[in-house]
Amino acid sequence: MFKNNLFHKDSVCAKNSKININDKGEFKDIQQYYNKYYNDTNKVIVADNPNKQVDNNKDLTTALKNIADKPIEGLSVKLEIGAYKDEKEFKLDKLSEFGKIEKKKYDDGITRFTIGPFKTVAEAEALREKVLAKYPEAKDIFTMVFSLEKPSYPRTTPCDSMPFFDYVAYFDGKDLNDPFVYDGLVQRAGNYCHGDLIFKVQIGAYRHPENYKYPNLKEYGSAEIKEYPDGITRFTMREFKTLGEAEVFRQEVIKKGTFDAWITAIYKGQRMILTDLIKVNFYNQKVN
Image (cartoon, rainbow, N blue to C red; front, side, top):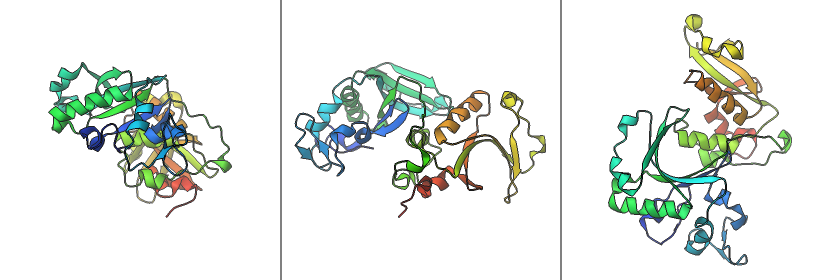
C-alpha cells in the first residue's frame, strides 16, 4: 500500500490512504502502476521535471498530483466502503450522503459496497478524506482502481528467464482468505511459471471420501483422487503451468457451485499450498 503524503502533509488521507490498481488483470500498487515516475532506487521522479527526484519519505504532493489527477484510460475508480460474505453486516448506509451506494456480489461470494465511479484517483481520495473527517469509524474504506477489461494471464517469458519478485516481502504472513490479498497474489504471480512447478484446482478434501460426488463438474471429466499421509483424500482437477490459468479454471468451478474450490501446487512431486510457495518465492531464488 502506498501511504506517504498523498496530497496534504499530515492530512487524514495521507495517514490512512490505501490505493490499489487492477491494471487490466495485473494487480499493482501506485509505484508499480506509475513505474515511469520511479527509478531503481525507489524514488519518485516528478513528472514535470524528470531530473528532479524526491524521496518517498518526503513530501510527494507535486509528484502525486501529476499522476493522480488525470483520468486513467481503461480503468474505473471507486471507493470501496465495505465487503462482506453476509451483506446484512453492512452498517454504513449513512455514507449515502456522499453518493449513491452500489452493491455487487462477486464470484468469490463477497458482496462489495462502493461509491463512484470517479474520473480520477484524486477525486476519490478527496471524498475519502471528507468521509473520514466526519465518520472516523469508516477507517477501512479505500480507493479501488480496477480494469474495465477481463483479466488474462498470457505467459510471454520463458520459465527459465522469469524476472525475480520478492513474494516473501509482499505476501508472507498475509491472510489469503482475504479476497483483497488473494487477488493481489494471483494478479502479481498470475503469469509466473517454473519448470518443476504445476498448479491444480482442488474441489474436495475428506477423511471419508466414499460418498463425495461432483455431478455439477461432470463436463470437466473425472477428478484425480489421491490419499495423503495426513489421512485426507483430496480431489483435484486439471494441471496448469501458471497460477493465473489455474485461477481462471477455479472461477469456472465456483460458478458451477463448488464454492470451496482452491488452488494447490505440486513441486517436483511434492504437494504444496500457496502459503508454502510464498515462503520460497515460488522457487525463483533469493530467500532471506
